[in-house]
Length: 508
Image (tube, rainbow, N blue to C red; front, top):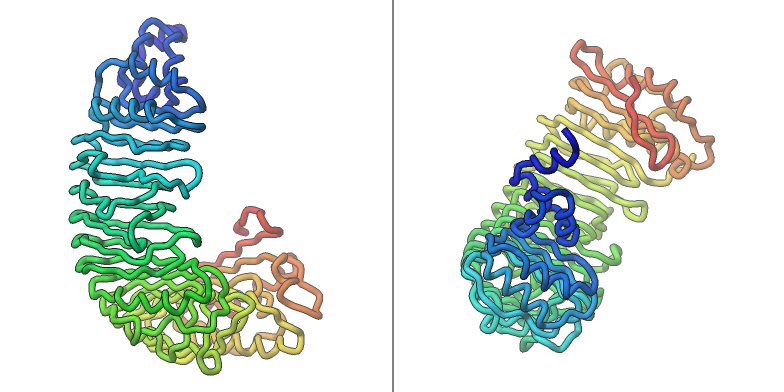
């Protein structure tokens, strides 16, 4: 069978699927393949118009199509786009019962009008200056989209006081860099079916007040230079993500706005603060933030912790992750009192220190530590299963013995672990002094994993010749004998990497 025969005999459903993945220009060119392909492009359910200065092609392509239902239309116009061509594309899409519409248009001056009962997803991006003096979202003129469930807007100026009430079925809403032209930079979100809300604003933009009528909201994602004043209730809110990118002089007022975010329904909270991590204020004070009695997942980044008992306000907390969160507590001590906590992860860089940690976490199963110090732990871990330890500090020769002893004390605190994962610097530290003791430090250990990356060690250990990878490998059997009790069902593995970027490989 020749290639022409194969193309001619290809099922029409397969041809339509192939052409739906192509740019519309490429789809039209397939008419030269064989006679059976002459009109295939005219009835594909997906159109992709992506080019520069192609108005004439778009007009001819739309006029040459058969009247078939349109599943999705993508229109990306680079260069000045006239209002007529954008209106033509929107009108055609609505007339053909389009379900998904994605438009990216440069220097448009007016929002295309129309209405559609079939449209379920709309993604609109305005390319160019976001400081244009026009209002691009006016639902009263845009028409009705009663079945729209997903809306994404980028760089679209919002001037309507009630911009989303025309979408009664709206379930997901995302706004990126959308300037407000409303009085007092206020944003009203009235959407009774909305379950997920995402907004991102740069430092030169501002949203000071938000009024929500969203009784079914479950996911709230806010990234901006200000923490807004929220008005409305969120009875089913589950996940909250906040990234603060404002300036330091705004921090105090912005953090105070979190007070109103307390909710008994929230189960996941992620708060990130970009910028300087040496902030002089305390950003985590459960007594002032409010009560989150059902919160199970908490992630904090660059959030200063000054409260001596910062997590007692979260009685249901199960997962806790702290990334570069400076401590302003006495003696740089961290207290983790969370009776339901099962996973604890902490990462501290070289400019920070955590010297002492007190745990009241009887259900803790997973413990991960990556920092410049080896901490002193107090508290019991009766059901501990997995421990992972990494070290990223500077260790001078006169402090090596102290760090070595601190590491052995840490092992003793975590002695109930059944799985142990050690990084290359920790392995290196263990090889600096003799390992004494008749009994293993982890009597219940069943799994031991070592990660050896010799290129990391010169940056961590001073005034001592760095051990080569071959030297570390020679000491591995002794470490295994010391750490891993002999058992027929035990597992031992070594992963090595000689230089950054190299694929990690496991030794047999």
